[in-house]
Every structure is written in structure tokens, then in C-alpha cells.
Amino acid sequence: MDLKRIVKHLSISHATVRRHFPRTALDNIERAIAQVEQRCSGQVRFAVEHALDWKPLMAGQTARERAIEVFSDLHVWDTEHNNGVLIYLLLADRDVEIVADRGIHKKLGQPVWESICKQMEAEFRQGNFEQGVIAGVNSVGVHLAEHYPQTGEQANELPDRPVLI
Image 1: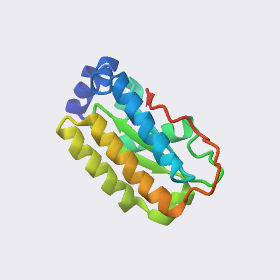
Image 2: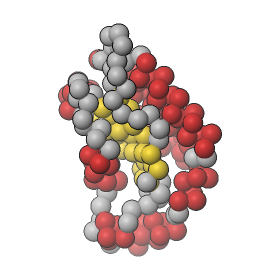
Image 3: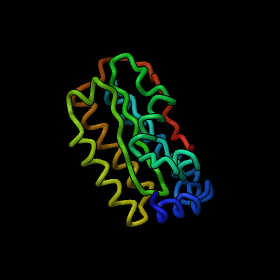
């Protein structure tokens, strides 16, 4: 049990998420996702969670484990070409995780996602939350466009609006 982590999770509220991601930031992130999806057939979701609930926190759940749950809960895995990507931020830990569906993950692998996460986390350390997310969305979009280019009229399979958990 990591007491410092527990205190951080207990001290962060939904208001902290709203402070770092006001409505205008969420609107800009949504637009960035929509623009990326116009250049590829991939699907991108962004979710931010202020902190873990008590039980998972006490069980030592990692941000990665939680991101995989959120990936499932938001049905990011349920895209026609298995090319959905979740960018997940656990704000209490300032930890970004990218979970990609098997189609795109197989083409890129974990090192590519980790590199994007590190770039985003560097922006967050400087207090640039909106810019960090948009940069991450755009980086994911570059890879999706390379491997899953837009091929005419594509359905938007997942909502573009960021999810606040």
C-alpha cells in the first residue's frame, strides 16, 4: 500500500478535472479528435478520471489496468477494423495510458504508444493539459492515417467528445 498515492487520490476531486479541462478545452479536444478521424478510418477516444475509487485504489490497481477497463466500458474495441485507440489520463497519478485495439496495436506495438504517453506527461508537468492531449491525439492520428487511411465516406463509430469519469 502506497500511502502517498492514496493521499493524492483522496485529495483530487472532479473540480480538479474541470479546472484542468474546462468546457473550452473539452470542445477543442473534441474538434482535434474529429479532425484526426477525417484523415483516417481509425477511432480515437479520450477519457480523464480524477482518481480511482477506494476499493481499486486499496487493491493497488494501476492506471494501465484501469485504462483497459475503460477501453472495454467505452467499447473502443468495437470498431469495424479493430483500430480504436483510447487515450486515458488518471489525473491523480498524472499517468497517461494508451490502449489500442488489436488491429492497430499489432502494426505499431507498445513502444510507440509509450513514446506518445511520455510526450503528453511532459506537457502535463508544465501545466499544459489541453495542449498535451491535443498533441497526443494528433500523434495517434498520424499513425492511424498511415496504417488506416481515409477511404471515402466513413462512419464515425465512436463519440468524439472527451469522457470525464
